[in-house]
Length: 170
Image (cartoon, rainbow, N blue to C red; front, side, top):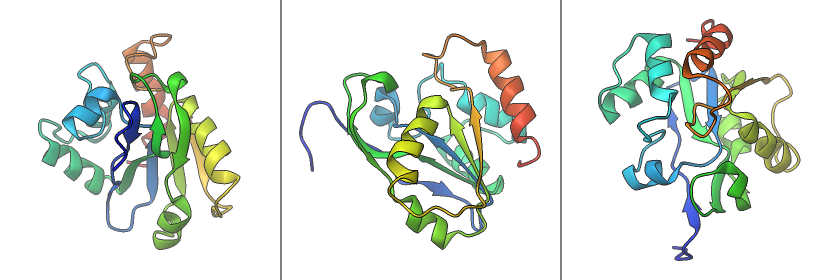
């Protein structure tokens, strides 16, 4: 185990059986790491948006995992690990990508990858597409980050953008 003070280790993915789409963040926030679950910061809009899209409950970690599985989804992050002080994506150093080549070969039903923010897309292009074999037929969608640090767009506008782009997948 790495004991460097700014070392961040991501989570295992959560997956439906035979998923058909995936949502990728960059790396869990400090609050998410402390709570050991995705999008745990109380002001992150991810879970409220997913609730609005699916009308499934999100009150507990088990309900959130069930939502992911019932939606035919994989929830993961682009990065397996990195060095980062704080939670900002702009502070990520020494990024190490997750193994998407294996995940996608084991789950050929995945046809769409959605990025929770532009930084996730940038990291995927730089550290995954250039180094791993990814199926050509994958469709990519970049969504506004649900992070409270993304204050350039309101939560309502984030929801509308996610709704417009994902309602056909849920």
